[in-house]
Length: 599
Ligand SMILES: Cc1cc2nc3c(=O)[nH]c(=O)nc-3n(C[C@H](O)[C@H](O)[C@H](O)COP(=O)(O)O)c2cc1C
Ligand code: SF4
Ligand code: SF4
Image (cartoon, rainbow, N blue to C red; front, side, top):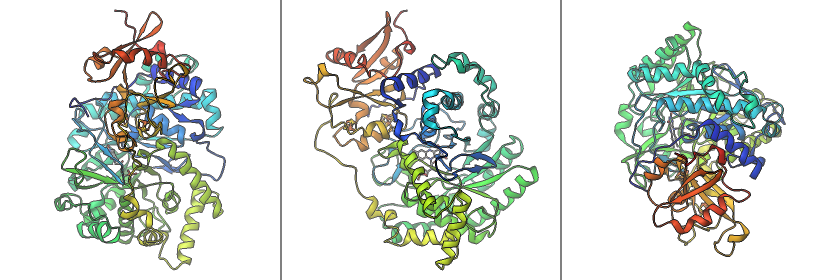
């Protein structure tokens, strides 16, 4: 990893749409997503549900995190079947220096990120671009055909944190208002819609991109502050609100018992102070009741989300912070246990299982293909995820997850999600459980049925081979392409004229402006080395070229052709690189959208 902070540089709308058209023509892929991994809604049982009263066609989508940060990430999620997007958290401190690497999804999930890496106005523009691109791709013939006749409605849910003063600031207020009425931003972007999409420049995009918010209550956020912020968002911002809760609500003893004694994650070291600083269970119950009533009085909607990540000591020391945030399968066990405790403490309040309550419970904790039907079948809705999308397959894991849900619904003859929920409740009662929630808890902690949640099962490391990664050639497993949340890795088939010179069927390149050196591709690359640093790094601006060390190559448009410039010491690679970038598959970015070298 380099010492320099590599900020993300979002790509303008014309480059992004140009890339869609170019990739489709040259590779039949959309942002590297294969045709076969585009989800076609409506071919089976009805997967629709609602989010704070707004319809969504599937109950799945990215949770606030690396997959809901850049416009192309959100579009990728949509193509793969996501219809709910918890946008990456925006807060007043938008020039945070996040240490790198910041993601470790090698076994379960750990990270040291905590909000958008972009400036607040940049975040707003990313979300507006994503919103427009989704509407365009629903109409554009090649993608419309893949998505099918009923792609169905989707929701962008904004996420803000972490204190009232920050949320009230001009900067964050501008962001919230900008998503509630994006007409000005949409109109400003219309002229940059390039061919072959120019016919959509006058399209009637909905100006309300988001009028719901999930409040990210980060570790240590005082309960009174949570209450004040939620009331402010409901009352003054006129948003429907979900409050995202932390697993520390279970208390230190219960968390320790679950992680250490029941699941065997004895290497996870809890931080006693975090349980003292965070919201306490009894206060949370009071708060939920107070906020439900408050929202109802205003005619607004209120719900909760289980859960944010679990803060633990950084025992691995792979990422450079003292603490880290744990996610994935063990978090699923904590979040479902918390759901069990909350339903006991607040009977008939939550809209889950056969409780009969009306408070929506949105969910993000270790959702995977193997537990999506279990989770949605409890009434948890919608379900969002981060960790599983960081594994090989990436966004391409969403469609198989939805197909698994369809299969599980077909198996029990459920025609809709309410049918599945009723069926799961009835089956749980029949099997002698109090509810479908207690039945799922029993399964998770049964070492045979719930083996997947056990530390031993999750300890398996990604495959490794004893070979130093080189700039050219590798085993071409494609993992770096799919695990990258930003679609910053692209590949080009090795051309015949280079087959004797370089190894490998495919060559891999980093679109450096989109790479924030999160470390995820290094984790999964079976060879020894970091693809984000070792593979040729392509940049399109002189400034980025000047500020990046190593094997970085500047791409420019020169007299209608692609020109490639190398840093001193790397000139010998320019000929080979140019030949690959100009080959039939070639650079996914369109030449006419790359800056010209003319002064
Ligand atoms: C790399 C990473 C970054 C995240 N960033 C945020 C964030 O900005 N805001 C937030 O509320 N949650 C954030 N989360 C938490 C997720 O939204 C989610 O609640 C959590 O990871 C549990 O889901 P999972 O087990 O599917 O990962 C982040 C998680 C990861 C892994
Ligand atoms: S290329 Fe690798 S390091 Fe860069 S953003 Fe993608 S996964 Fe992270
Ligand atoms: S760089 Fe590593 S992860 Fe990427 S294709 Fe090559 S071997 Fe696989």
